[in-house]
Image (cartoon, rainbow, N blue to C red; front, side):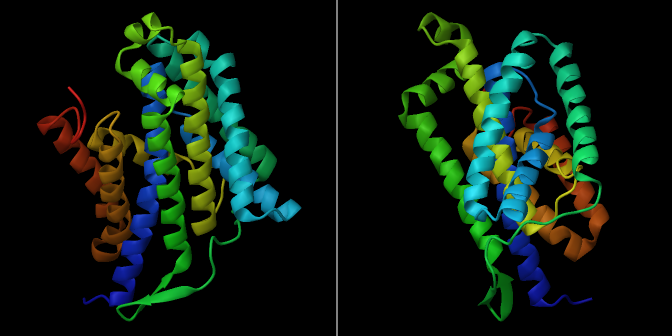
Length: 288
C-alpha cells in the first residue's frame, strides 16, 4: 500500500526530534558512567521528574515554557548533586551496589510520581504553534524548535568540555582517573559535576518530550532504554557516536512504524545493537 508523502515527512521529522531527545539522555548517561563508572538506571526517572517540574511551573504558575525548562534543569542539577553525595558517592567503585541503588531509586521516584501526580497523562504547552510546508507536506514547527534546543544544549556541553577548565578536568578524569587525581583533580567534585550535568540534560529532554508528546509517571523507561542502545551503538564517550546513534534510533522510531509497523520498530534497534556488539564491541566511534 502506497503511503502519502505527508505521513513519511511527519515520521521523518518526528524521528529527528526524538533522536535529539535520545541524544540528550545518552550524553548524560555516558558522562556519569565515564566519570563515576556507574550506570545510572534511574536516569529515566530524572527525565520524568524534570518534565513534571516544567508542567507545574507552566500550568500552575504561568511560567514561560523556555524559562520553566531552564528552571527545571537547575532544579534537577541540584537534585543530581544531592543524589551523588547522599547515595552514589558511597558506592562508587563497587559493582553490584550502584545497580541496587539506582534500581531502588527508580522504584522510589516512579512510586512517588504515581502518588503525587496520578497515573493519567498530562501535557505542557507546545514549543511552537503552527506548521510549515515541505514538498507539499505540513510539518509542525515544534519539531524543529525541539531539534534546535537540543542541538544548542549539546553544543554548549561540547564547548564546556573542550574550552573550560572544569570541562577539561572532567575529560581528564574520564580518560585516566588516577592520573587526574595526581594532577590535583578532585574525583568527588568531578562526580558531582557529572551528576549535575547529566540530570540537567535529562530534565531538558523530558521538557522537550513533554511538549511534543504527553507526560506520565512511566515516561522515562523508553528514553532510558534508547539512551543505552545509543551508547552501545555509537560508543561510550563519543559525542559524534551519540549523535549518529541517536539519529539512527530516532529515525527508526519515526519511520519504521509507518513503513512496516510497530513490531519491527521495536526489534530493529536491538538487532542492530547485537550486530554491533559482535562486529565492533566498542561501538561505531568508541575508543580502544
